[in-house]
Image 1: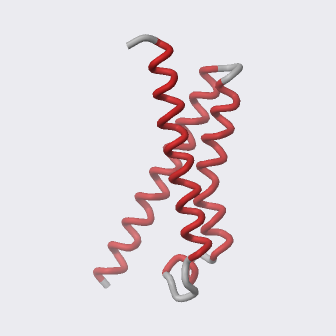
Image 2 (image 1 turned 60 degrees about the vertical axis):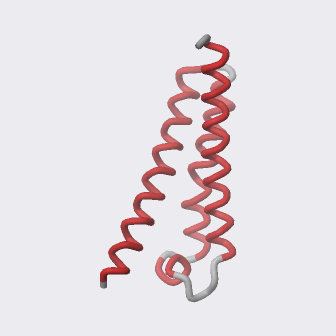
Length: 99
């Protein structure tokens, strides 16, 4: 695999993760008033928490055009933030289901 293909794959994965983050933010925005997210976190905070990784990822892609190492690092931070957010949501829902 050459460097060009790897770079395109990196950008593709980053864009998919950013789109996932925006989709979660939209779902939190459209959530019903009696949903767990709205009741326990609040609609605005839940949307901001979900969209923040997309902001980091897209900012990292922009930085990546000039400084590849720094931009790649910011993209990775955004991806990790998205993973932690998703894992936290799953764990909280699981705990709630057991109670």
